Image (cartoon, rainbow, N blue to C red; front, side, top):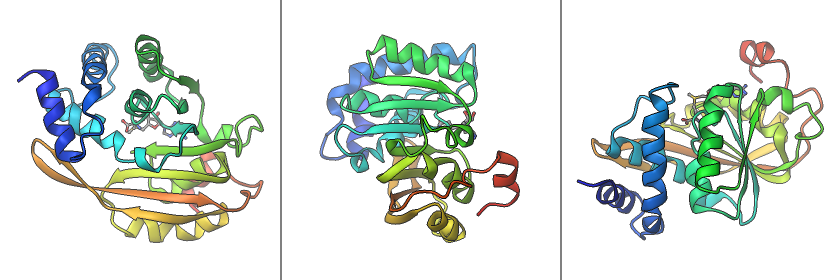
Amino acid sequence: MSFSEIYLDIMTKNFPDGRYNDYADKFEILYNELVDFNEKVNLTAVTDMAGACAKHFADSLLIEEYIPEGATLCDVGCGGGFPTLPLAIVRPDLRITALDSTEKKLKFVSLMADKLNLNVTTLSARAEEIGQNEEYREKFDCVCARAVARLNILSELCIPLVRVGGKFISCKAAIGKEELCEAADGIEKLGAAVTVTKEPDLITAEGAQARAVFVFDKETPTPKAYPRHYSRISKKPL
Ligand code: SAM
């Protein structure tokens, strides 16, 4: 089967209204470049077409509907560009800052942003450091993260970057409500509250896999003490 046949099959199984069907050409370029670059720098273990279409492309798009039109978005721990690159392909209205502490992964994100003419800027830094930098603190309409840390740690990395009135959107493999309960006190201290909890199934070639999407609204400013140094965040999560 060709890339576009596999892409359409996976996308229509995950999004039956066909909303992403027109983007096969751009995702094919992304797929080919990802496989190529992955030979030099390890970005992912998933390199077969069906795996990439489901576990990278469709998975990244599970949060797309929660991001408002024209938003500034910071993707914390974007790695090789997920969810940044799929979101930027289908949502040219977004202004995305792709943040990661590992510079060599960001090279791939910059390469793809240039090649596909995407509205993406890369930033090589630690989230907890820019969270204390006035240039970035409470400046983004939305902050998202996929597969970066447990929610009680992730929330301290991400929520300080969200402006009051904005959103933090987390996408993970199924963790159930347990991680959310564990993180609840910290999220409140950081000035946010959960507004959406969804557990969609991601349809892959091997069958359905559970996912957890949580959306938090930033209601009040984050106290200046947060984010703390990473060693404090990880040793003593809020
Ligand atoms: N989000 C991508 C994905 O879903 O494919 C990458 C996930 S990878 C497992 C986690 C990434 O988070 C790594 O690239 C790592 O460098 C980055 N990371 C972890 N902690 C970070 C922090 N405090 N600030 C910035 N990036 C961080």
